View 1 (cartoon, one colour):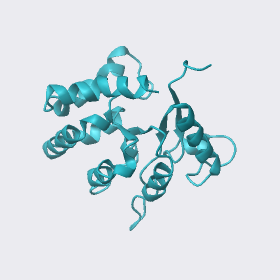
View 2 (spheres, rainbow, N blue to C red):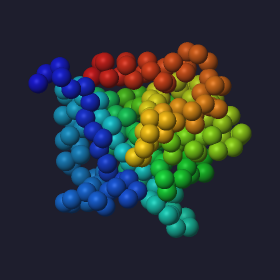
View 3 (cartoon, helix red, strand yellow):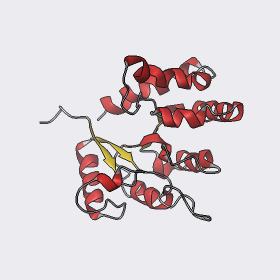
Length: 199
């Protein structure tokens, strides 16, 4: 059905408690099937949404960003596929790493990842970005610098009311209120429209 679909996913590779619940083989960033799917998406113009934590849950001493380099390898192998990395690689039990923003910025500044976008949906991600005055300041400056590559969303787990569902944007208010109107509009709406309209 050409012209009907603009995206594919969400794909869950290494994601907290979710990965273990998937039937069949354990998902892996090294599985050739993932490369075949990403190749196909690039050929037909589908945007891919990919869930993959930056690190393992409950890391032991010395374990950091176990999945980061492997994920970069996958992303780099598919330069013709628009890929959205969901939640910046964090979650309920995957806390931001020390220098987490720098790891993400490393990719944002590398032309080899120009086809990759970064999703900040989920109230769990918002929680980390508004945790302290320092994280609010850092997050606002980070989003302003990279406003063309950030996508917002209202992801929240099992919202019981519309207020809970829409609460994500309220949680982000301390960061969003520091952005220029142009950057705010890109992150909240126009990046999404551009990326998926071109899908």
